[in-house]
Length: 119
Image (tube, rainbow, N blue to C red; front, side, top):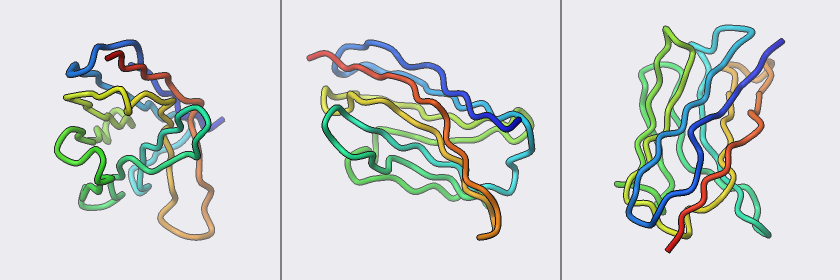
């Protein structure tokens, strides 16, 4: 059974840091692009960051650029999101997503982890 399990969320004061993890199991995701998305109450889910399956190139939403860093450990089948200088507007449920290298493949979502930033 394929699973993406996020962890590392919690409550932090503005200006603080958190490190989210997304551990994949059930198959290897080395060729997959991995992404982080977030959804705040009453808002649509939005893109946060992505790392390509090959080459490790990363992309970020403008709202997090310079504050968040995404990385992956292929040996551990895990991706990370280091979040620094957190702001109250970063409060959301953060989701991990795996996108296959081909259109015939299946995308996967994790169950989400809550991040709350107090002012």
